[in-house]
Length: 201
Image (tube, rainbow, N blue to C red; front, side):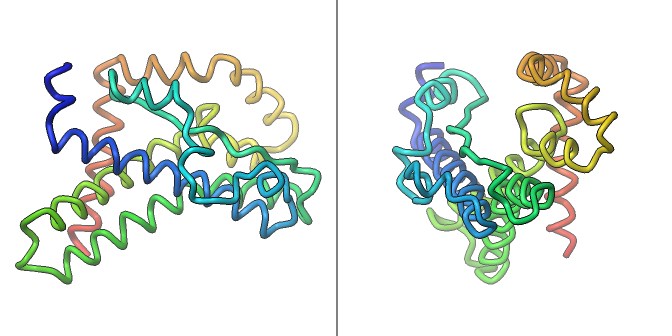
């Protein structure tokens, strides 16, 4: 494990993941701000400064395991002009930012053909793969992922109340998903399916 820390490819991948996480959290903050909730702005989160978005435990976890996270952007749903829509749009903004980054990376790669080798091609290829994976991951409807926030707001009140009971167990459920080979493989299949869709366009 420690040998890979000196690998330029591994270092580049970690840096690109961190940059993608920062843009993901910035997108949440911007979406909330545009809809009337200034909480993120007041707490200094409406910025691309990685120091205010990254959580060091999440960064350290990324260095020793295939998992990592950033600090969630704080929101006050009551401040939204339309509360339910505001939560849905703000939650979706993060994964959508990853999808936009992936699409832009792939678009540039396509435009570069056949000159896709070298450091730029490597960076764009990694950005594409990383952000597709982040999009798929964050759309999984398991707390505390963004997909769970979206699903909660779309459910009728009674079903939403039942669904909210799994929130304390969400991180353990996620850990279970990624430790069980068939479930982990299903996640990988979804990532490759979306990547294949891009390849076919």
